[in-house]
Image 1: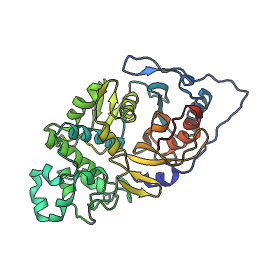
Image 2: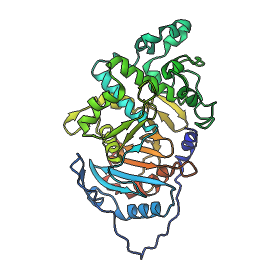
Image 3: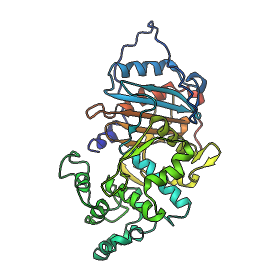
Image 4: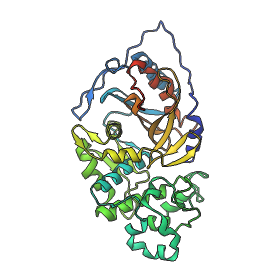
Length: 381
């Protein structure tokens, strides 16, 4: 994520991209999403306390190119899909690359493995789950201190640099991993330069190790595990998971889903691990994985493969101390979960420029202000 650091600073500023706002101009409100019998109840924006006019202007701005190359925007509120727009050639049944939002899905998969006893504890040493690489831990006994918790919170202490250079640059650690003959071995052999658990370092290699842990603990690859314990219960029938040449799914960024299906995963998190009457992952895992594990920058924290950011004051809401839970992927892939608003927002794009964080802008300037303030849940003490 070469540009991800910029997001940490931009997130606190509402970037208003201009569009023509002629109050006398009549444009149709967004339609109610289609009922596809895929598990989503659909409804109108107004029925869930959202202003359809604001969302109309958002769609107009996207069509005008005010946010670069946006592919889709979906909004779920009060458990109902209320806004679903696709732009350009994209359509409802088309899978989209999640990039590093994949990491957030993998966090849920680890949680289910913990719930079912395949992983005894996230405080287990990583060494316990990689007997095939025992010699690495024997040669550097300090690595025995790295736990699954450290991988989840990106604080393993392993030397890694994914932000200083482009992904096509040989100096990028991610580039080096992808061109190694054994991705897991490459990551585990990296020098340990910090005490585990002390410093956040964005590390897709650590997310690959989480996929290796699922394989060794559950005795199936992460993509099959995901299908069995998450996708099938959610009615997700079409997905693609990129793999390396060894057949290991890319758990750092290789998952492709329909936007509607990614929204389902977001809703499971919002609903404390439940889909309908079925508890797919424990509420305790949702709470710990989406809570603060380590600080990244002022006002920006990280959970277990989830970003956590403040919900600042703006029109329609007044709290400055709640957090937005979200997944974030290369070129503008976002899954926002906003418990105070009882809302999930999915945004897909492909912007490798100043528009990469455009979904953040329109989340603040259109989607959140569209919520009727009287429908916002009171802050729990």
